[in-house]
Image (cartoon, rainbow, N blue to C red):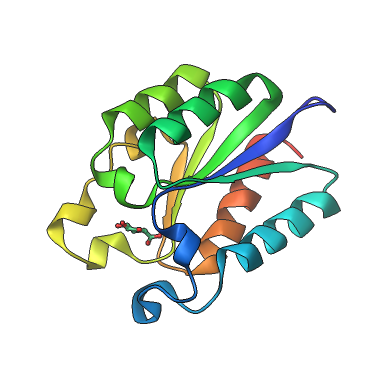
Length: 148
Ligand code: DHK
């Protein structure tokens, strides 16, 4: 990846309430803590991350379009939009950047409606079920794809 590009880290709806939200499912770690860990891990490898969370589908699409030219890859937890959003999938696909999809919970062990992802078909891979470690593993995978 070029020296001027960074990794775009996207968090979908409701992930701003991590720590307080259904801790039995999503754990007690806050989004700030996850972002801090990702920033530190990337910095050790000489890479910058651009962090963005939104509860709004269109805001995520806008940020993907805006950030794509300065990004080398995308790490995303689409949250509830995983299971509903063609627009998010299309925006990610249009960037032609490597995308890694992550989930805190094991979506395959939950309700049937969570077992389909619109994003997985355009992602390089999916990591699901390891809590905050899903993000770390996802970033590691993306760095390897980018040969960092
Ligand atoms: C987060 C959400 O908000 C849910 O809507 C998804 C995902 C699962 C997670 O496990 O990180 O179904």
